[in-house]
Length: 135
Image 1 (cartoon, rainbow, N blue to C red):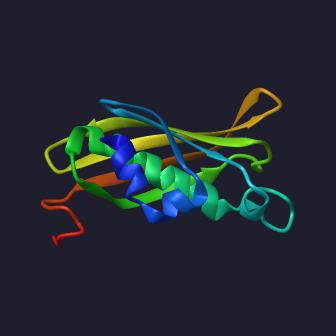
Image 2 (image 1 turned 45 degrees about the horizontal axis):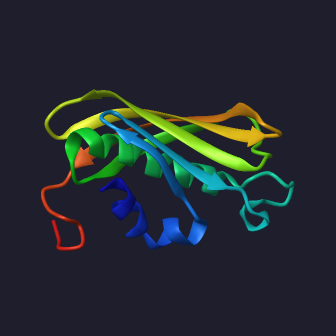
């Protein structure tokens, strides 16, 4: 089911996002770093890192809420993202009937080593119907 959701997202397909793991309260997404993801200093653009965090937070939230969207989130960039692959790992910290608070840690894999590059936290809210059909 998670793979179907990811494939249905045109932007995720455009970037080449991969679903690595999905279980109750946990999601892991990855993205191979391409040259066109980089900003002028050669780091992965913060918007790309932010996208992966947002998507991973929502995937984790969906494992406990079903159909959902991000209500809000914040991100702290720890260090520049330079490497081959960006990996996001999100967990549900707490949830109730209509919302979940999730945390996401983002790592870059460089030369076989994994380094923390950002941390995000967000509130994910349940939606009553499929957003494509209207809320």
